[in-house]
Length: 153
Image (cartoon, rainbow, N blue to C red; front, top):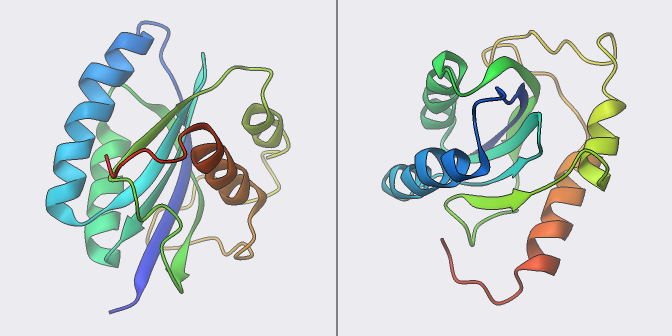
């Protein structure tokens, strides 16, 4: 079965502190994702999340459906989903990257104008973007640059 990738953005509620992100989102996700054979990366800034999930299509879409219902995320919007030749984040069950509103990811997120991609599309109607999607490339670059040598988390 081919590997599937899903990329979404969401609004981070003000009450969701960095400690909540790490303790209540990242650490439990590492355990769950390992059990489900899901890999990926979570970038979190002061007001937004960006996450890439990789794995078996049905499993990834089921996890995305749960994320859409999670009160720690608001305005969950699908950016991209579809088959991929190989995992980009195979080393990490959930690789966290703390960002800021002035970093490169935030700048790329601001280019996602409401009409640029159908951000409200459900996971079952994916938006296709090129394999070299700038958000994916930048996340992978940050993950490998900041955490070179970090074991699979």
